[in-house]
Amino acid sequence: MKLYEKLAAVLREHIKQGLFQPGDKLPSVRQLSAQHEVSISTVQEAYRQLEMENLVEARAKSGYFATAQTPPYKLPQMSRPPQRPLDVSQWQEVLYLLLSTDTIGTIQLQHAMPIMDAPSLKPLLKKITELHKHQSALSLPYGDIRGALVLREQISRLALESGCHLHPDDIIITSGCQEALSVCLRAVTEPGDIVAIESPSFYGSMQAIKGSNLKAMEIPTHPETGLSLQALELALDQWPIKAVLLTPTCNNPMGYTMPDAHKKRLYQLAQSYDIVIIEDDIYGDISYQYPRPRSIKSFDEDGRVLLCSSFSKTLAPGLRVGWIAPGRYRDKVTHNKYVSSSMCPTLPQLAIADFIKSGGYSRHVRRLRLEYKLGRDNLICALNKYFPADTCISFPTGGYLLWVELPAQVDAVKVAQQSRENGVNIAAGPIFSATGKYRHCMRLNFSEQSALIREEGIRQLASLISTARSL
Ligand SMILES: Cc1ncc(COP(=O)(O)O)c(C=O)c1O
Image (cartoon, rainbow, N blue to C red; front, side, top):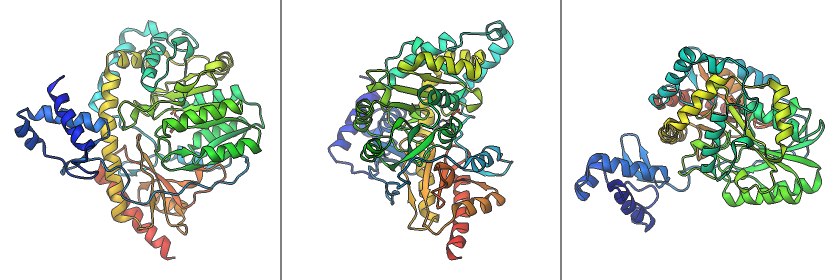
């Protein structure tokens, strides 16, 4: 056992025995270094290890604290969407968000964009340039329509961390996760079919449902445990639902992770009602928990789970590299993918494969995971400081998005319009519902820009909210 592991084990034991209660300040790095006669970097490494296990959290300029197990503020209630399948609307609103660019000086809280200027991403960029300059013969011809084998091999290695044993032949590379979701939906449904989704849900999956002429059945969703299995079972009894499409790990927009027991139970429900699960795992690798949570796919025994993901949230969305593990729908998914866009560009695939193989991906994700967690804590502090006391906030377990529920009389769409004029961009709630619900809600990101800039954005939003409330 290395020195830092020994020290981490001592601290872990102290926390587990209750010597440090959730929220208690832990000894400083210097104190521990002197007490245990180890170097400062050994203590820092030990704390980093405990941070990855979610036992300890670092607070800017204050040191380390035992992780608070429950959020120190009000969470949103279980959602209550309409209890019937409906057509998805909101395309104009989604288009407006997609087309809105951030000019210099804008405070950007609206898009789900990862940190892309981290030094740990540099080796990937270097590899892209190198391939572009010296190995174009590898990337110019047509390639395998399933994607580059070297990348599929690396993805099957990564999948082990979420409990999945996938053969490279069980993986199909796509142009991002958005294409993965549409290709899967078309493979398992016919126009007019019903797809169950979380509520609120990522607008891109709902627009994919609309694009395939399907109906969405929004299922009540809990801000900590995700899709209500009880509500889903009732819906399955009542409606001929074909598939469930969900983001159970580090959800967008709420940030929750469905507990393993719920994931397993959902899979069992899918078996007994003979439906399909389309699992969107795009944020799974940036869970604050280490090792990362299991996927529903890891419980799959009969190939009914289609796992979709991409490198858009862990590396960069402009690379457009995603993938599907389609289970028993492999042939249909391969055909749909071919019809949709033939093969994907090879160069980014080769560069990403190299980045994973050399250990760069794991290093990058390990670093950013901690930054995102700190970003969450800082944003929540700012929200607690400036937003009305009766605001409800979700408590993300990973990723860089959180959901805010304002007092019911506040129109977040109007607040978003006004704040845009003042240079603060947010995503208002209705696009996260099939039918424009959640007008008093907003999704905020905490990945781009600094905590100070974000705090300024929150201060400005709070002032608009307080005016909106008094009207
Ligand atoms: C939950 C979720 N799924 C899918 C996507 C689409 O990802 P990609 O950019 O890889 O197509 C996003 C992007 O915001 C997302 O948040």
